[in-house]
Image: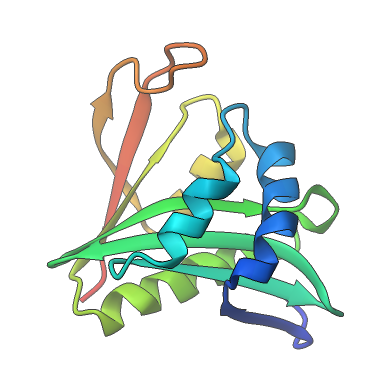
Amino acid sequence: MVQADYIVRKMTEEDVPRVMDIEKESFTLPWSKQSYLADLKNEFASYLVCEYDGEITAYGGIWVIFESGHITNIAVAEKFRRKGIGTRLMLELENVARQKEAIRVLLEVRPSNHTAFELYDSLDYTPTRIRENYYSDNGEDAIVMTKLIF
């Protein structure tokens, strides 16, 4: 699991360059810097980073609208993977959703992303539907996974 000296905090504009490094390392369709900067100003969005020894190791975001939280993205820098950081971030994002009175959290995952699917499954997310041809880079479907959090 994650060592005690990892901290999770709100993302700031100053964090975005490092977040972009992790984003590009993790995704075939990375978000733009402008997308993150805009979301940091969005009242429905909350973004967190995980930091170790002054280095951002991971980040995640969630939009909460009415009773639903939608995890927009989560990524861990390659050299910090398999240390429980993704689990910790997911739990923190769920806490954000609870604080904003959400009763469920949902997300999309590629069927080919077995590591992410296993993480979400281990946290009791359940596949609830398929979004066909969701990913524009290769036309891959998305599995929508949902968890009740109340």
